[in-house]
Length: 428
Ligand SMILES: Cc1cc2nc3c(=O)[nH]c(=O)nc-3n(C[C@H](O)[C@H](O)[C@H](O)COP(=O)(O)O)c2cc1C
Ligand code: SF4
Image: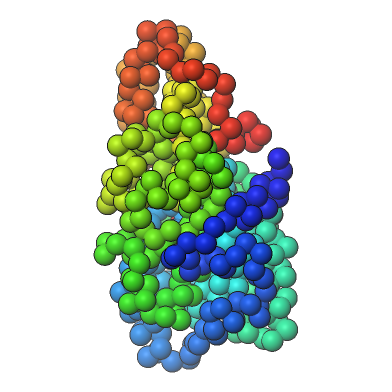
């Protein structure tokens, strides 16, 4: 199935949730400007007023909105950081969606492009940016171009906006890699210093914000902090887009209030299609958690005890093999490194090799494996190795029994073939 067909399927599988804010109520609803304005009303802005800027930033901080691109960084704090540096800022909307199993940014840009464009315009006005760059996955380039053409007709935006098709690859969506792609056609990370908010594209302070974050931002700009906090939990307010994949009846992209019981979240996709043993939360950079234990707890960082990352939940069937799936995912992640830093260049292939041996029940240097996982953490120029370390540690813990079986040369899985939940083979 092509990714465009998958996108159509994800949209048609959409069901309306009580807390749907970002996605239109019905899958067939227009994504056009007229429908958008009818649903949300116009976003009133006063870019030349310091009072408006301060009041709006205050609302964003009070709303407690955090980034939906993976790191959950407070959006208000990032906007303020831009104001602290000299130079004309640039805003980049990050719709790269390099995470192979995630579809939420594409569904959002296909279904509600104007909400994202409103959020980018608001961010630009708040930080005084002279340019907005929409970096979007190729599947939704047409949708974003069409939305922009509609806006240009009625001159809705005061800031110059251009669209760039995102680069392929897992690390291409990392903030500095996006800046590097736009500036030098090289989608590889630039390293942690200086921060993009200080010196990014063309040496200017650059705000890189995930497209879902921008869509939420535009609603906070319209309705304020109290409205935003009406759903979600006190510590993690608002809704979140989730991609539900794996052993579920109708996988798709859904919008849920943070804190909804995890089993109810899975029910949006029709519930498990087979008994499940574990969930991968957040993305390939995410954390495995044991399924029976986690189903009754709230879907939130506080409830699950792990970050929600890019909002991906993959259900692994009880019949599958967690060790085999982990080995495949880590092999894929190792292949995606930009190859610039030691931990990525040497550490990830070594870890992947040991996991491959473990998956096959072959002799493994298990102590070295766990030591290497510790050693790669915090030592890359970006967080790629950290994500792999998190993933492997959680797998060795959650699939502990299966790991012991494999170390003894056995596998208790009934289905040894790779699960279709993790679309890595088509990408390798
Ligand atoms: C390896 C790697 C890949 C990433 N891929 C994406 C991506 O595809 N889309 C995205 O929005 N953020 C991605 N991020 C996170 C970005 O670096 C950045 O934190 C995010 O775009 C900031 O937006 P937010 O604060 O709105 O979440 C990635 C990070 C890493 C380390
Ligand atoms: S840590 Fe890995 S992915 Fe990140 S910049 Fe270094 S080599 Fe590239």
